[in-house]
Length: 112
Image 1 (cartoon, rainbow, N blue to C red):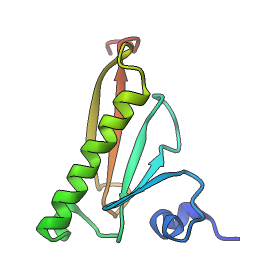
Image 2 (cartoon, one colour; image 1 turned 45 degrees about the horizontal axis):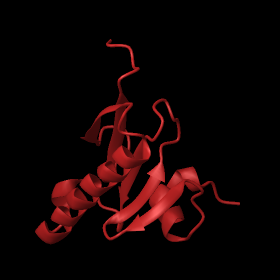
Image 3 (spheres, rainbow, N blue to C red; image 1 turned 90 degrees about the horizontal axis):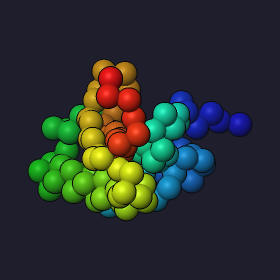
């Protein structure tokens, strides 16, 4: 049995990634492996590319639009009365494929 963690995007495309929440035009929404903040999600670009600039302009815009739509869905799902904001991050130093982190931030979090 394959370990889906070794190929997160490929396993999502094959329907065996258990963290997939939804398919969007630019990729897959997955629940963050560790829910250190309730509602933390990741948008995985599909097809897989190394970074945002590897996408043609239209696909790049679609990925960023999908990231913003995911953030809006997280806002609605995480109860606006307790939600302070949503933070977005596109990082590439650990996983060498395009993905965007969507972090809901809450009023109850410690300031530090």
